[in-house]
Length: 117
Image (cartoon, rainbow, N blue to C red; front, side):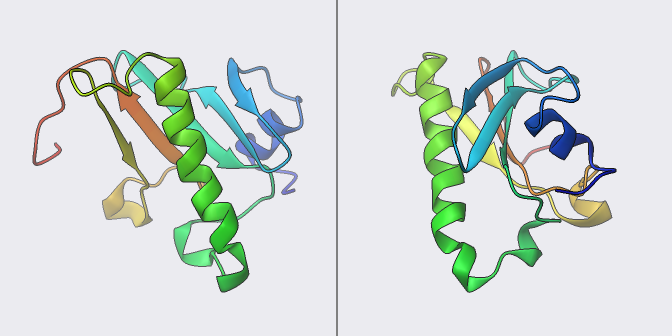
C-alpha cells in the first residue's frame, strides 16, 4: 500500500466510500465525480501505479479486475443486450489519468457515444 494514495486509503477503510464489491484482490466503489449515471471504479487492493506497471505475474489480477467490472455491471442491471456499459482504463496526462493507482472505470446508465469526448 502507498501511504499517500487515496485509493489505497479507500481499500484500507481509512477514507469512506460507497463500496459495491470487495474481495481479497479487488475493491469496487462509486466514483465521487461520476461521468455517467452509474460510474464505479474497480481497483486492485495492492498498489499498482498504472496499467504500464503490470507485470506478467499480474496477468491473473488484470483478468480479475475485468471480471469484477462485468460483475458490477450485472449487479447494476446493465449487463443486458438492451442496456450495456463501458469499461476503460486511463493512462498518462493525455489519457486522463488523475489518481496514480491502477483503476478500471465501469460506466453505464446512458447511451455512450463514440468516439469518447
